[in-house]
Every structure is written in structure tokens, then in C-alpha cells.
Amino acid sequence: MGKKILVIYTGGTIGMVKDEISGTLKPFNFEDIYAHVPTLKFLKHQIDFYTFPVLIDSSNVDLKFWIELAECIEKFYEKYDGFVVLHGSDTMSYTASALSFMLENLNKPVVLTGSQLPLGVIRTDGRRNIINAIEVAASYINETAVVPEVSICFENKIYRGNRTFKNNASHFEAFLSPNYPILAEIGIEIKYNKDAILKRTQKKLSVIKTLDNNVVVLKLFPGIHPNMIRSVVETSGLKAIVMETYGSGNAPTDELFIKELEHAIEKNILIINVTQCKKGSVQMEKYETGKKLQEIGVIGGFDITTESAVAKLMYLFGKETDVLRVTALFKTPLRGEMTIDM
Ligand code: ASP
Image (cartoon, rainbow, N blue to C red; front, side):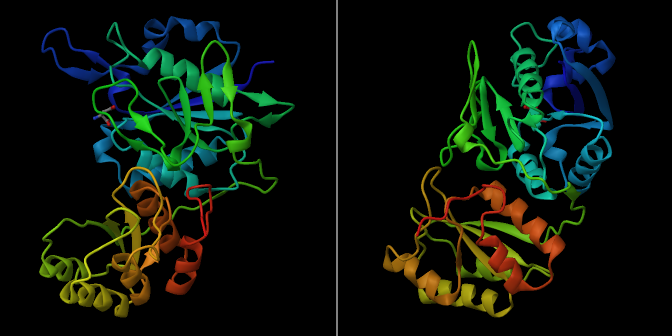
């Protein structure tokens, strides 16, 4: 039997056509979707569309947008079996990460997809992506969703959303998830990697709608001036720094640099250590340059992506005021976003 799927259109390249006169890309009326993707008619599922009142390029995503999106899923949660979110690819990994935390006890599929070429362009990847996303959102075995989590569908792969980052601005295969296996591979058949998929929960969906963006990303580079770190630390209201370090979580041992970090920690600002490497995990105890960070109270982010660390901190500080509690929760994998290797 067919499933009921809600496709939520938020903007991005996928929903665009070329304006014949000006030659620029502009969003098309989603009522014309069947003209662009006629094969949608042949899917056995009931597909409804919800278009956001203002369509955005995903570079304009903000907390308000995430809350609106989470509220939309909450509003239609009982009515539909699965959700497909059409979203620009630029910040899709951030949105997927944020939704994964905000949608507590999710037990239905929420599949984000988009495209590198607009639907209104002959060689578009959007047609395939939207159909694949709908198939995955509608995939159930005995009333249990096969992928009851927030995922990204791009170029014949299904990824855990909070494990991804946008890796390629010009290839159809735009995303990577180097630290976690793909959830499904779409070929002639859809091959689900069942062991990698989060287990369904029996609890009721609870949507968190308070987020706190007093968070910053600080990328280290050789020669970084301690004053730069001081100015970040002095940002009014700052609660956490996602610090992108080298290799397995290493940073300069220079006294002035360490002093600035200590100053932040004294001010109750959390410092999360994530690596600039795309694959692998932070292990601060491995080298002296990492050990020093551990000694002063920097928190290891294991193999979490920067995107996911930012979203997790916004979610945790939106929910909790106690820094110790945020620290404890940050160190705990909540939605399969990191692997703790001891
Ligand atoms: N700039 C676009 C966006 O992220 C690119 C895309 O849709 O892939 O909204």
C-alpha cells in the first residue's frame, strides 16, 4: 500500500527554472512540479506539497528558519508517514544536523534533498534526487519506517544528515560522510545498511524550538595571533567555541595562546575540539600539543563534524542553562552524530 509523504519546499537550486528573458535562475511555481517531474505521477504514494511562504537560498538559513521547519514537521507529523525537505545544498548539512537534535524521539523518515542543477534544466540531478528521497521516506516494513531519522539523499546515496558536510560545489555527488557509513545505496534496488540506521523509538515526538546561537567556530592556522583569540573570547554573550584544530586535535603549546583559552574556560565558555581533518577523530592524549588542551579543560569532540557540533551546541544551550550539564550532554552521542572511541 502507498504511503503519505509530505514534500516541504524551502528553496535552493532544485526549485528553479531559467527565466527565458533575463537568463537568470528564479524559483518556479511548485504547482508545476508534475510538469518538471512527470514520473512523480507513477509513484504509488500519496504526495502532498507544502511550500514555504518565502523561498530562500540556503545561505540565508537561520534559527528562525530551523524552528519554522521543525514546527512544520510537528504540525503534519501524525498525518504523514514521511517527510522530504527540498533545501539548498550549501547549508543542508547544518539544517540536517539541527533537525536531528530538535526532533526528539523522531520515528519517521525526514529526508533532505536538493540538487546541483535546477529541475528546470535538462541534465538536472534534481529529478532523481526527489524521487529517491520520496522512495526512502515511504520505505516501511510492517508499519516501521526503514530510516526513522534525519537523512540526506544525494546522488544515489542516503547519509545520516548530522554526519555529512558539503564537499563539492560542482559535482553531482556533493556530500561526504567520511566518519560514518552510508545508510543506503540506491542502485537498481535500494540497499539499506540496516545496522547503521538508528533504531525506532516508541516515545512521542517532542520538538525543541529554542536554540541559542551564542556559538562561534574558530579555525586555527599557523601564526594565529593570540589577540584574535582574545577578541573572539570577549564577544558578549559567547557560550561556546568550536575550535578546529590540527590532526588528532592538536594546537600550539605557545603560552600566550594557551592563556587565552584558559581565560575563556574561566569565563565558563565551552571549548570543543574538532579536527580540521575530514576523516578521523580527536584524541587529545596522543600528542603533547593535544594533551595541553585536555589539561586546561578543552572538550574533545571525537569525530563530530563542525556543522553538527555547532547545531548540537545551539540545541543544548537552547535547552539547558547549566554549563556542566551541557558539557555532559555534548560528550554523549545523542543522535548518532559521533563515535566515542576510548
Ligand atoms: N546556493 C544554493 C543553496 O544552497 C545552492 C543549492 O541549492 O544547491 O540554496
